[in-house]
Each structure stands twice: as structure tokens, then as C-alpha cells.
Image 1 (cartoon, each protein chain N blue to C red):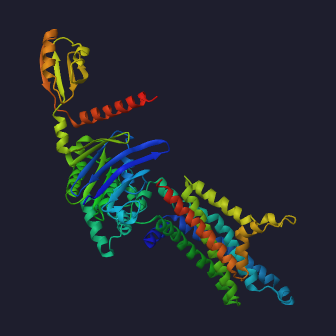
Image 2 (image 1 turned 90 degrees about the horizontal axis):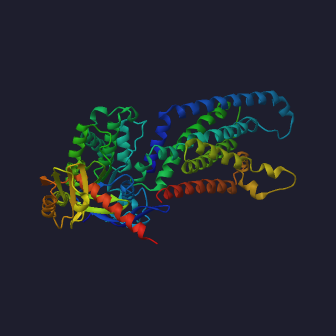
Image 3 (image 1 turned 90 degrees about the vertical axis):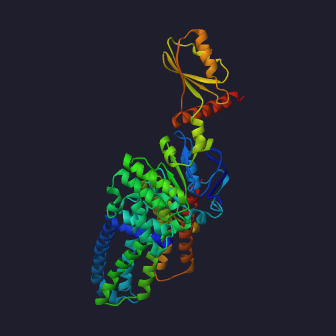
Length: 248
Length: 317
């Protein structure tokens, strides 16, 4: 059942120009940023040769690519997730799912995985760019995979937030704004920790950026993985609860 | 075994009580018509039966499964057409119906035959490949009905199924409903009273969330035979005098010299009316019993119910 709903959601994305447009635009922008990064690397290469323990190709080109992708996708995810539940409710198609023999958990997971399917394709497409570097250089595969993992976890977290916002909002635009606002807040949460010496461990822990960057460095700590797992589960459970409340 | 058993259903929206102590049951072979004025609680009741709304109190047993305890098992027996057909406009009729079949767990090899049968029954074969968004309202409504009967559920719940259809389609849908009623249990809601008369075996009238009539169509026809006489006189009558006769409930003045007298079916006052008319010298020209239409019963019942509830409200301290 989850598979049925997920497949339907995934196919629906590609029925409208939305998914195609987003894939194209993101690929274009990231390719541009990627090329700039490659150029920077070529320019600073002679200097790097003189430094001991200098950052390599992966550090200078690949990591920034994924960081840029993360920021751009933070803007894009709310646009993809905003229609999930909200539009069904507005178009009165939700009763179709609610009166079918599927549980609310299956509905939410189906919707969630449908969008994740698109993001899976997107991360693969983005990863083609670093792979193209193999034609003229070598890569730190471990670090590349860590970046891939970090981006995918981050997108999973973004999507769960967007899905929840789509559950509670009455209009898709509100859902998009809400999701974007919440994500941005969580993203910049650790900024305050930099001011003076007011070091807030809680805010630092809550910040998405910190955990994302930590995995990006290639250091995969269980604390970061648990953070993402809790984050995703929390919003998925909240979404299911919200759909349960629909009946009350 | 009963297909649906609903016991003491209540549904509150905030403080507003939309459904008040509703109990009824549905057996295989029944076609139950839900009647009621706007806002009577028809749609709310149907949403509760389909598990889209939870009742504030009460119990719903669908084919032996409690809708609250095992919703998935219970919902497997239901086909539901809400008041707005739930259609994905960006899909074609075929895509949509096969998605619905998958949602209702129709076995993979049965999906194609099931959609074909449903399309034939609803007259959709010619529009199989068209986008739902491009279909007319009548066709969209038919897709909605096809979606509800697709997996041949035991219980089919249709919320105003004939809205937006042309007269020929309405006739087709009515005969479809009768046909479905033979092997399944069907509940349909409507404002159109003749529809109930034509396609239902049972009728249920709801007013302000309360059940005010649950009858078989035969019983209803009994109701129709009674309780009104039409009186034509030469000069206008004194309505107050007539009203004072025992058994007379109300008087409706159709024209200066033509009135209808509604009375309590247990004592027929026709004789007194006739003798009063002669005694008063109003010039009796015609007195005849009226066979009431469904509309009359409906209006009489709903008005009586709202009068009652108005009275009880007034009597509150």
C-alpha cells in the first residue's frame, strides 16, 4: 500500500512540469557553481602544492558543491512538499485515501517516499558532477560518500518538515512558507552561539547545519545520525497524528 | 448478518450537535435512502460510516468489524462516493480507476477486469483515455461512482450520486443502484424525493441530526394515503372554526375558496368538516381525500420535527 501511494505521488510529480523544471534548474545552477569551484581549484593548485597537509580536490570542489546544493534545496523542498496533503484536502480528494483500507501511517509514508524518490534521483544527478572529476584527477571516495549521505539525510529531514507543514496548513502557499521559515530557523539556529561567549549547547545541537557539516567532513558520528533519525521521525509522527485528528 | 450496525451515533462540531443519537442498520439487499434538508447531518453521518469522521459517541459495526477498533478491515467492505467526487484531475480515467483498485487491494490480475466492468456499468468506456480534468461534470460524477463500485464492496455509500447528471443518465444511475442493491447494501443520500421512491427499499429522514422517520417504502406509501382532504366551497371558509375540530392539525389555504385540511390519521374528521361546512352555509362544492406525495410527507415531518425542537427549546428555563 505504501508502495502504491508512493508510486502515484512520484508519477504525479512528473505529470506536471514541476519536477522536470526543478531538476533542470537545480542541475544548471549547481553545474555553474561546480565549474566556478573547479576553476578556483585550478588557480590555487600551485600554492596548494607548497602547503603541507593541504586540502585536496574533494575538499575544495566536492564539499562546497554539496553545501550549495543543501542551501538551494532548502528553498526548493517546500515547493515540492506543499501540495502533499494540503492540496488533497483542498481538492476534496482526501476522502478517497481516508475511506480506502489504508492506515494513516501508510498514507503519510507513501507520500513521504514519493517525494524522496525524486530527491533520490536528484542526489544521484548531483553526484554525477564530482564523478566527472575522475577523468582528470582522483577523489577521496569516503568523503564523497559522506557528502552524499549528508545531503540525502538533510533532504529527508527537509521533506518530513515540509510534509508536516502541508498537513497543518490550509493553503499550499502557507505550507511552503511555513516549511521554509522553520527550516531556515533550524538552519541558522547556531548563529547565536557565535556571538560573544554565550555558547548554547542546545541551540547548537538543534541546528541542522552543524550536523550536516559534521557528516560532510567525513566524520560520521552516531550523534548526527540519531539527530536526523529523531528529526525525521518526529515530523512523520506529527503528520500521522495530524491526519488522525482529521477525523475528530 | 447485518452489513452496517450504527448504534447511538453522536457527532459534535464544537458545541454544535450535527448528529444526535442516530441508530440504524443495513442488511444485504437493502437500498436505504437518506433524506433531509440542507445541514440535517446526512453527509456527516455518511462520513462517519466511511471512517472519514470519528463519531463523538456511539459505535459502528461494518460487516462484523468495529470501525474504530479495526478500521482497515472495516473499510475493505466500503465503497464511498463523497458529495464532491474525489478525483485526481491530472490522471486519465483508466489511470485513476486502476489506482483506486490498487488502493482497495484488488488483486493485480483482477484490476483490469474490475475497471472494465465498472466503466461499462457507469458508461465510461468511451472516455477511458481522457484526462479527468477534461471531462464534463456529469462524466466526473460517473467516474466517482465507478470508483465506489470498482472493488465490488459489500456496502456502497453514495452521497448525492445523481447531482449534475442529465435525465437519461439519472435514469441509468437509478437502475444501476437498483441492480447494485440486489447483491450489496446501498446507502444513498439525496434531496430528490422521487429518487428515493424509485430506487430505495427503505427510507430514513433526518432533521437537525435526529432520525425522524425510518420506514420501508411500502410503509411510506401507507403514509401517503392518508391525512389530507381538499375542500372546495362557494364562499371563503372560516379557517379558525375548522381548526377547532378534533383531529385537524393544520389548514392550508390554496385559493380563497379552496383549502386543504391536514389531520391526524387516527381520527378522520371528513364527516365533521362536511357537516360544519353545510351548517355554516359556506356552500360545499367538493370534498376529496388527497394522496400525499413524498414531498408532503417530507415537509410535514421535517416541519413537525423543527416545531417540536423549537417547543422544547422554548420550554427550557
